[in-house]
Length: 124
Image (cartoon, rainbow, N blue to C red; front, side, top):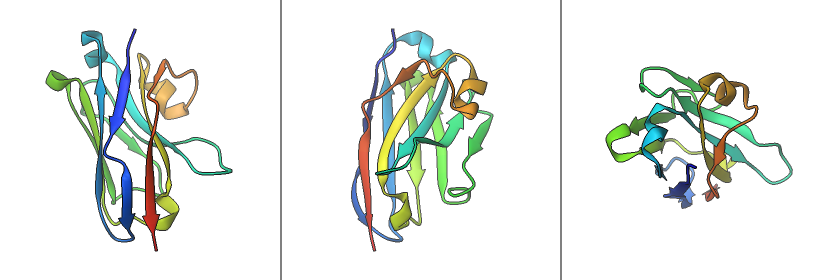
């Protein structure tokens, strides 16, 4: 069983930055693909960024490319999402996710584990 706990959300002005962290329990999580998803009110949950277990492969939603960076520290069982140049449309609940199959994260299907989510609000 893997547990994921997000932190780092909050309120920020447009153009500002936030860094989200996701702490994972279970040593085997180091072999999992990890990802960040978000869900805004009235919208479906969408993939923001994903990183494979080696940390050498990443995928990003087009809307965040060049602004967000996903990274991981396997020794600390932690994955990060650095968010720069934030926009009001980035406002959402952000969820950490883990999956044995990286392709499941990228395709956003049958995700093995979810965190509880952290709110990010960007004011204009």
